[in-house]
Image (cartoon, rainbow, N blue to C red; front, side, top):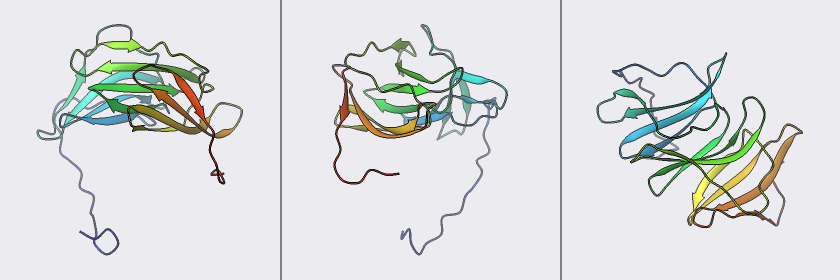
Length: 170
C-alpha cells in the first residue's frame, strides 16, 4: 500500500475482559502478540499497573507482577529488550531518572543499578532500542526542555552521554 495515496481508516476494536482505567502518558510495547501497557495518569492519580491486550483475541487482562514495582509514573519511556520491558524516567511526584525491567516471562520487576553519570531526571522524553542499547532523547527535567542524547548499554548498564554534531532539534 502507498502511504501517500492510500487511506488507512481507524477501527475501534471490541475488546473483552476488564479494561484498564482511562489514562494518558502511559507507555506500551509489543510482546508475543500482546500490547503490554505500563503506568500513566488517570486525571487524578499516577499509575504503576501493568495490562495486556491480546491482539489475537482482543482480551484485556491486568497482570499481577512480582517484586517491588516502580513508583507510579507518567511520561516515561519504555522499550522491549530480550523479553523484558525496560522503563526509564518519567514524572509523577517529581521527575525520575531510574531504570527498571519487567521480565515478561516471570513477570518480576527489577530496578537496574546503572553506572556512569545518569541523564538528569526527566519526563516526556523518547527512547528506542538500537544495537543492545536504550537511546534516550530530550524530555523535560523540570527546568525546561532538553535536546541531549544518552545511551544505556543494556548489558553493562552503563550510561554514556553522546556528543552529537550538526544542528540539534529545537
